[in-house]
Length: 267
Ligand SMILES: NC(=O)c1ccc[n+]([C@@H]2O[C@H](COP(=O)([O-])OP(=O)(O)OC[C@H]3O[C@@H](n4cnc5c(N)ncnc54)[C@H](OP(=O)(O)O)[C@@H]3O)[C@@H](O)[C@H]2O)c1
Image 1 (cartoon, rainbow, N blue to C red):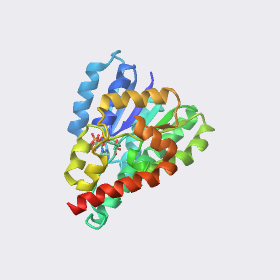
Image 2: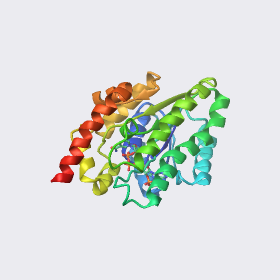
Image 3: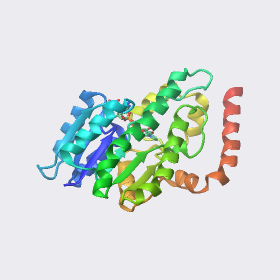
């Protein structure tokens, strides 16, 4: 039976991916911090199983804590075998003005979004290399395709994932392990709702015209891209163009964004 390990699988995008995978017959290991959310996700997934032999394990762990996430991934592998899919969706986002955000916010973004992903991959690699199989799917962000006003803590942590994915791809290919990086657009999840509470007005206006995605639709696009062995998945026309033509588009977009910021500041 195929096995997917999903960090951040108790909510939002990770949970929507878990739901589609359980319907495809996977056994699932969910990793996140809050046990009540994990339990809720497990109950929902149990109802969607297509085979009673599909296992759903939950591990309460903080991905920013190396010991906790390593133990969770290693236990999941001991129970259900090397993952066919390792999806790193655990993440945090707190927008704000650079000068006003405490340094802790920047440190937490790197600790959770970047190091939390790296620790999970590190813990899974030995078993995946031994089996010479599997796909690592890192959930980055559209905010990693262009630096955005108000995302000085979040954006760089997601840019770092792009660097990791690009550098790691060739190395793991030699072992039959694939790497995919996903740049999701704004998606209707608890994280986005929390972000909106601290988002500067300028950021709201810059990002406000973009289409809001539903997690189940995004999850389907992600899994379709993974099936097609895509290295980068940038859902929707805007992010597809940004992913392909970033260097050409950035000066024009920055000129446009600066105009929005000027308008907000003058009003
Ligand atoms: N929603 C969007 O618009 C959007 C857009 C682009 C990219 N993304 C990225 O997509 C990923 C999923 O976000 P989402 O919108 O689905 O958010 P969400 O609904 O808030 O889910 C976040 C998940 O990550 C877990 N998590 C957070 N911090 C963790 C930590 N330190 N250790 C372990 N688990 C942790 C949460 O559970 P606990 O809090 O219980 O640990 C939860 O399961 C994130 O990496 C996010 O940056 C989201």
